Image (tube, rainbow, N blue to C red; front, side, top):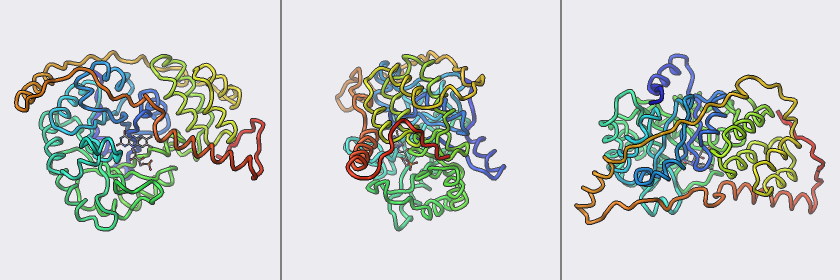
Length: 401
Ligand SMILES: Cc1cc2nc3c(=O)[nH]c(=O)nc-3n(C[C@H](O)[C@H](O)[C@H](O)COP(=O)(O)O)c2cc1C
């Protein structure tokens, strides 16, 4: 079993120091072991896994191996699950328990497929079900193990329903709560409702993590002083600058070098897609648009990407230090799915179904909306620049720190 960190104590210790925990968000495709290792070297206090489908995790060894990896230094760590019933959430939590410091229930995902199957923000319509899922896991786990939930606002104007829901969730005994300060239908262009986050924080006693629109450490500090929250979670901001929490205004080249080293050492443990998308996001402020376009369109060979990065960024002028080279071995995780199978069979006997093997869900089967939207934005920008606005080419670096 991996050494454990007590997340409740982390929050208390931050509060005693009059500060907040800096948290890397759960991000499908991206909050993988290798990226978590990178952001931990830049001030991240707590990292989440990507959202893992609890039912696939329980049913399929292949899904477990694909969706979850860790190493001895990968702590504090929260595994986030998408689940729409208590058996799946409890069983997945028990199975992952030896390797993480807490589990989190996703009640924020607004995607159509998730809503249709009762996952993510669809759960916000059934707070009793969320409460049952969280309460059951809480009762079955040691109190030092964190159980949490990530929700969104239920309304942008009146927080009564959201506050009632948060209090109901708090009553299940959870360790902390994350609130993304937008409603499910609100797009990212709608600014986060900070006053709503402040109101929620004042209404509950457990630590609250505020999430939304954090792109610099200054943003995080402002969010903290405005809402008095206990933790700040960043998603898009930390993709485009993994060194955000250490105060860098944009990605330092040293961080790109660390990513290069991690990817080379992780070798086949990291997919081409994950390695490449992260390079693409984190070099946004370092490369010209035309180079970024070129990077996006490289042929799918890791070596080409490594050579491209070395050719266009002053990687070799960054002084090496020990931590740049020292990347721990991945742990070999083993899981016991007997209890899940028994529970699912008993449940199936009640409603006439059987436990199927395998899983159809593969988040890496496509590039995903986030990368596609970034790519489309860049394609449009470059077309516009070529059409009219002056465009600087020639591999010059855009250091805007
Ligand atoms: C690429 C991507 C993947 C995401 N995946 C998840 C996820 O797995 N679980 C989750 O709760 N939220 C997920 N989110 C939402 C973020 O955690 C966060 O709530 C949202 O992006 C707002 O924070 P931001 O303004 O810092 O980006 C994802 C967001 C992005 C951009």
